[in-house]
Length: 433
Image 1 (cartoon, helix red, strand yellow):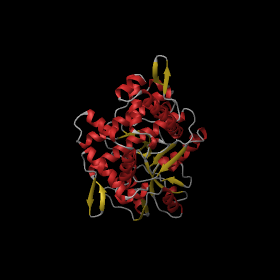
Image 2 (cartoon, rainbow, N blue to C red; image 1 turned 120 degrees about the horizontal axis):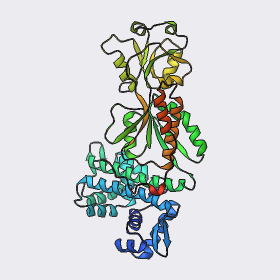
Image 3 (spheres, rainbow, N blue to C red; image 1 turned 180 degrees about the vertical axis):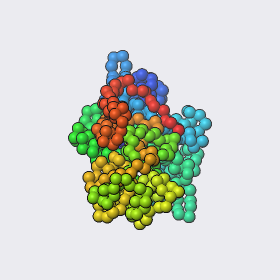
Image 4 (tube, helix red, strand yellow; image 1 turned 60 degrees about the vertical axis):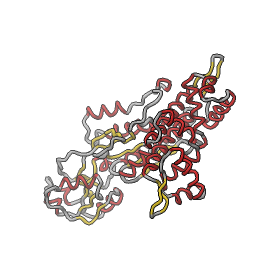
């Protein structure tokens, strides 16, 4: 975790949730079998860690402040997801047993679970968090005994996380992100200092689009930091699943799992691209034979660009190919210094002045640029504003990208900022499995 979230205990979060559910510190202390001073002290420490008042004390009792309502929504999501992670192990047979197991889990156990998910190996995980292997194993074995599940197994490669351990750890890691985002949301209501947004940028549009909108967004939020990840589709999906990536921008995949949600924003067909001044630029009508006469740069196996290339030449003779690359910058340079051809989306071609489209209709439906998120994701206010900025950026380029006037108007409407009534937000959004 980050931003101080890793210093907050499960007990504090349970107490805070109990105050919200019971409507006061007195009832929460009875429910949690603690003295009122102990509950008050734990809540005061939680408020100090979060950086805002969460509970309002008055003559008629205690209630959540506006910031408390926002933070509690994240706490409830954390508890729901963590309890589901334990339920998935199959050793807890009642909701009360799940809650008791979670209540007994310590910060150290959360820490080693997340380290093992990230590094898989016990040796690498212990080195990453700065404790000895025996110490990590002692914490892990105590957790195994309490959860009645095998989390670590001995293999020829050494002590590794078991399949059950990986499932548990990935769920727990994602759950802890809710507390990170909750603190970010509360602090952003005062000032966004230290908040970080992590975006995955898919090739074929994602990097170009983000470059065009990030400057505008960061001018409005000079204290926010943005980290852009460029990884494979599989790594992006994994990052979304564990909360390492907030959302992904770029070409949408044709195959999205049940745990991901895609929002298409702009259709951007593939075009055959060439350098300006290419011999094909002077031809009134380009044929497939003309395409076969030139070297091509194609996408790597498994990429969207490669899939569309295979569809263009399905059942036909293929052109000469020496280079496969998903790096648009490399492809652009290769085309600029030769007569090679490639496939680029219409959105990419708009932003590469040195290249032009070959006058040929491929007659193959194109992909869409859009946003991919986790199912059940609850964005922060900063996330929502950045996504709105992305939609607005696409709306501006929609006419140039060949979008119809009607679709362009629809995208502009979706890009309009929305006023969020924080008190009216749902109490909890259930984790979708």
